[in-house]
Structures are given as structure tokens and as C-alpha cells.
Image 1 (cartoon, rainbow, N blue to C red):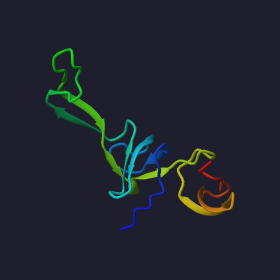
Image 2 (cartoon, rainbow, N blue to C red):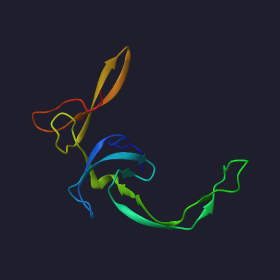
Image 3 (cartoon, helix red, strand yellow):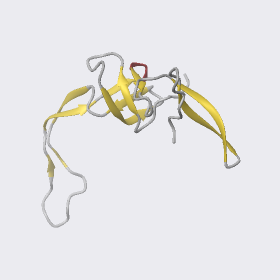
Length: 123
């Protein structure tokens, strides 16, 4: 399986399916090997943690303890369930690639595939 993903960290994405269908958010982390991304404030799951001592506590005081309880955190979403939002036309779009010559090097640049837009996504 290839690890090429058209979505990167910091991109604005639109969720196509799942419990958060129709919502938009920024990509916090991308995992190309797993073909998954973590989107800010979407696909929130509850994680039950128990209190545990912190590894880097101060030398002077006693051991510090990280509080336990129920923590809400964003879970990974499959890349196939999200679509990149074009920064120019502000609509979910498919991603195409164009090779460009920049300072003597050939660079692949992502472009919007919408009719009439075709703007570069990478600046």
C-alpha cells in the first residue's frame, strides 16, 4: 500500500461520512502508514484514565500526580472519509498535482480540481 496522502497537517478538511458528517476542521496530525488523520474537535471519544505519577517531577517537592478521570480527545479518521477544502473557493474538492519549476527544482504542487477554480492549494 502506498503512503501518499493528499491531506497534510494544517489543512482544512470536510468530513464525508461518520457521526460528524458535514463538519469541517483542521488536521492536527496525519498518519500516512495507517491512512488516517486526526481532525481538531471531530470524532471525539472518551478516554478513561487513572491517576499516575509524572516522570519529570521537580527535585524539591514530592512526586506530582497527573489527574485521572474521563478525558475527551480526538480520535483518528480514515483519509477516505475526509475531503480537502480549497482555500480559494472554500468548497470541498478533489486534489490534483501539477509539476512546477521552482529555483531549478521540479516540485509537485497540489491544485483544486473544481470546475473554474484550479488554484494552487500549496502556497
